[in-house]
Length: 164
Image (cartoon, rainbow, N blue to C red; front, side, top):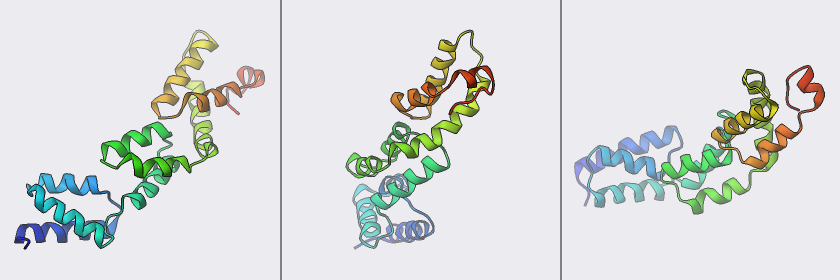
């Protein structure tokens, strides 16, 4: 038997989930903020999952797609964000494994191209290190960043200051 407070919380969260994708971690956090007991929180989350209001794998797919396309995040930063939201590694690892390196490179190249001329450095080595630090801060792996930096030709360094 669920009490009135739990029923109200369930209805609020169901309406919220009907409008946008959310994960179970977000729902649990909201329920904690509202002061719902652990047993009732689990009841509400079970209801939301059973009725397909919340699906962590569906949420993860949408989250990964959005963060790559719109925020230009790399794999590592996406993993950290999903971990912070309480999504299980068993759920997000297969989704991230399906994303090809080319999708990350498609976002990383223009990002580094735009950053390259703004970096103040005394040498190309120092500029490259600052660019690597910038790319890693965005969650990209060192090998992807090196691929982009190594593709800089002498012509680009002398003329356009762009990455290919």
